[in-house]
Image (cartoon, rainbow, N blue to C red; front, side, top):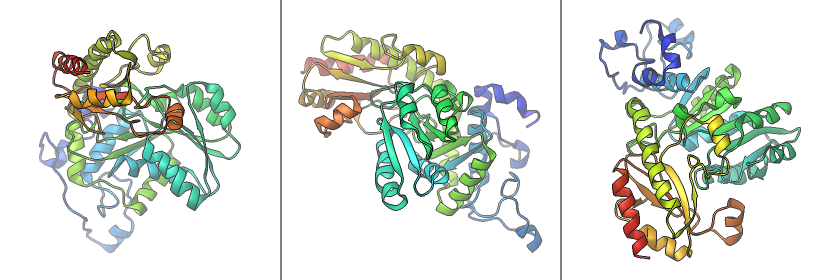
Length: 394
């Protein structure tokens, strides 16, 4: 495509056309799925001189694939990064990021409300096999990070907003603190997507997406993504992905490309619906608290406005009642289905702390009766009606 630089400032054009060289695919408006596991060469010299960074040269499916490359080019542009890499899952992306930055004996600072399996990886494998130590912080105040970082801190892990209590971290402020000790800042940007937040512009070093969520958008694909701004870090991530075998299949990459085309339209509707539902819940007599960064009542609303340009469809609330009543409410819903994920077309409900101990609930700052919902595309009137009916059954 001619003069692709014009697309770098327009997310709609990036998701629709950027990175797609139609002249290489017989001018097909939808790129093909390259299902091949390898590519062949004319000569041995051509093989041995192969440069995996050349977007028109490919060798083996574990290293790179043309369909995967289109997806990566789009995410790189959306995140304002130097490079991006796709992975077979969000955890494949997250663990590769940690292992690319940390070494034996490293120190990591991580927020308490980071993704649970990532914390399990840090607390289990990284502690046991790499002697990595972890300091956990709530993350709301920069003073916490200043007190937590050390000379041997190599990585700071953020998730803003977090996906249960929806607390935010000051990305720019944390990046300045981390920079003083040479630590890299990793952030899970799945909730906002690259449409509503660009952490690399705010000083973060690694941005992660679970592409199973809004990027895929249809609850039919598992994947992950990393975007970075440092060329040396990009080289390490590329080498480690090749060694660990974490690249997604071409069909999964194609589904993510398809999801990207409508992502901005979808998340705008998710946001509109979630705001209506959040306001309904905030005014309901049986609701004690609503966690949604788009509400002016959110304690970090001003920070949200500084580093986000929007919110999406995920929120949580606590009822004025017991954990058993919260479970009853969730199980009384009809449109909202009980499910652990989010970001697709469907509305979901889940009790993430239902089996937590009271001590863990205090650390995670959410009681056992906290209810997380994803507002899908079924329409705000239908979702509010579903919630009203469930409340009436309490």
